Image 1 (cartoon, rainbow, N blue to C red):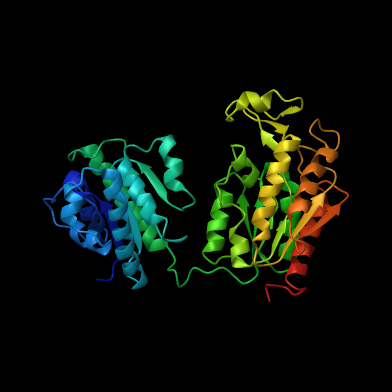
Image 2: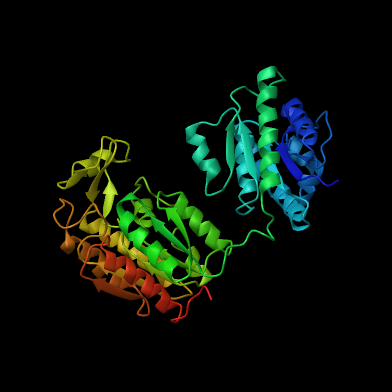
Length: 413
């Protein structure tokens, strides 16, 4: 059959009617539907294309033991591991164009674990009536996955559920039809990833402009704790030839539970790949202290607080926190297999702490820099510049430093 191959992840023992209806609607659109049954409660009434016995065997277990177990937390990882092994084999043979999961919160979590093994561009979708904010961020991780709130529960078929599943079928089929294959999805040589956020906007604009003038392709990521982690994930997958990390603040924010915390592995992917990294210190000295921040009172009560709007305010990390953060950055950058250079502006590290701002404190910034120097290995260069991070010379310097790390040659050629 010539249609796109769409994998349906679900549990036929509890959601059989919904899964079979979804398969019907996918096939109606001219695609091929492959049901992967992750049931753990017993034999299903309907037969799947890839059933629980096959999945358990792929994980080195017997399905009888899975069915007999009353410990869901123990059997779920087994079924996930088996499904991943089987699905990756399908993918390697070119027999997979997209995947969709339907079910409750447990199924959504299993699907997220399975889907994260497939890179950017593979159409991925989760349909769930329990798509609550507390769960969604965890399901997303750094994946390009679509989450659809079905509203109605998967308990028998009704007109509302049929409508939701029909739209879901249209969405996953449409994504599969429009997606580039892994063999085609490529970015040009000389592709540079950069991080930015609202208070480094000018710096990022200067960097993009100078890079593009020199023939590089630029891929910006918002340093909100998710997009910057996604950048690292793409670097892990082999994308990009270099990085200008203007806003690597997700590391110190992770330590002190700020809004832009980027997980324990932030700032490590480029080093593992050995691609050139130029690091700026945007916002490493500042943290949010608005009403939604964890430990709000601890930070909002500090002497220097700059209110941005009714939801956002900023304050400075204290000297102890800056020293802890500096050591963490040094440990990560010391592991890099490729060249690393750090540029430090001496007149503030963002538009929030320019000279004249209540947050301007160049002496406090040097607490971080000196601690960083103490812990960095000698071949990681630190260069200081007498300007603010948002000033035009700093953006140009970041680009020129990256070219120097490339050995004076354009990566785009």
